[in-house]
Image (cartoon, rainbow, N blue to C red):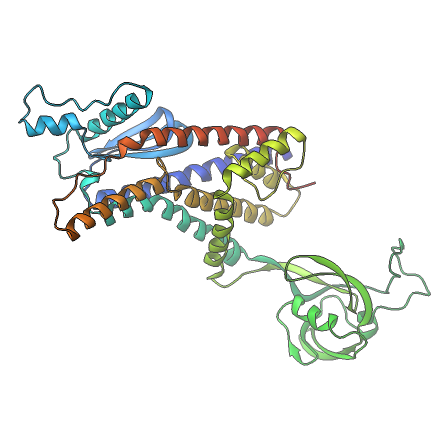
Amino acid sequence: MTVIAFVVGVVLLVVGLAVSIALHEIGHLLPAKAFGVRVGQYMIGFGPTLWSRTFGETEYGVKALPLGGYISMAGMYPPSPKDVAAAADGGAAGGTEGRAGGGFFATMVQDARTANDETLAGSDGKRVFYELPVHKRIIIMLGGPIMNFLLAIVLMTIVVSGIGLQTATTTVAAVNECVLPAGTTQTECESGDPASPAAAAGIQPGDVIVSVDGTPVDTFAEASAIIQASPDEPLPIVVERDGREQTLTVTPMLAERQVQGEDGQVTTAEVGFVGMTATVAYVPQPIWAGPEAAIEQTGAVMGIIWQLPVKVYQTAVDMFTGQERDRNGPLSVVGAGRLAGEVAAVDAPVLDRVASLLGLLASLNIALFVFNLIPLLPLDGGHVVVALWDGLKRAWAKLFRRPPPKPVDATKLVPVTFVVVVALVVMGAVLILADIVNPVKLFG
């Protein structure tokens, strides 16, 4: 059963990732069509095409490897110099070929121009991406990442507001019969052990704490804060029992307990102690808690992305030295799938596992959002930078009343794009290998 649950978790993550990619590309597709750009293809995945259908002028399909997707827009870049020269000569032969000089990168530039020119075939010259106003190009390129961010907000909202966060409620789960000596290995009360303050006050399991020392409380943490700050002081506690409220008096005893500070550090301190525990339940949070959680996690992911090469290097070091992986470090798709399988297979209530899987998928969408904003081609952020540079050139020319400049030819950046792609492939390979031989451990 555990193996089946593991496989189900992996499959659910793959399906969720495919849906996330599909929505990302829809985020590009919808504004592109709204602005009149000719879109030739909308594809999910890479490699051989498994299924496709053409509706209108666009072919929609699914490919074998669900590790990405793309839409093919007419004129992502301006036409190559040879086409511009041919148009200027009225189509006469002998125009400038516009071919870059020899060399590997020059060939890559020319190949990119040729592929771009193919997307221009069949267009009327007015439905191409590069001729759109700058703000429309930016909207198209940001549409994909924003779609991932919106999906992350929806998933986070389902988790924290629909399902809720596990919270210690004001309902008493258990009351200690006695107070055991500090540092003892004793597990049961003996005749000489003093009764716990909660038991002495008459607090019973199932009681709902209404107020402590005259202060209404909504969570067990609020009640605990008052109790811990009041050792050896009699405190009136109002509890609801069997539908009726009654007031009990409890005197917290001074005891050493582990306390977590605001910085997250756990220290030992002398605090008030009464000897009762709370019932833990899912408590739905306000509707705005989901967006807040998504924004907070976005900031954390940005902290990882901007130092991604360093994080990947450290992951490689941990892999070769056998050190435990950083749980907050980068993961590959393999690592994410493995985590999803572990979450699905863990011995926990189904609702816990569903919440964890949705949270993991939300985290992946936030990672897609942040990663695609990196201002380097071929990522969406790189196309935004190209559009902004084009707009800046046009604004500068207009300011000084100069003729409009030629559109920015991003195919010249193909060598830089190639280096970025190689770097991404290398880092991805390192992460995949690390996720296989030295995976992140959530349990145990």
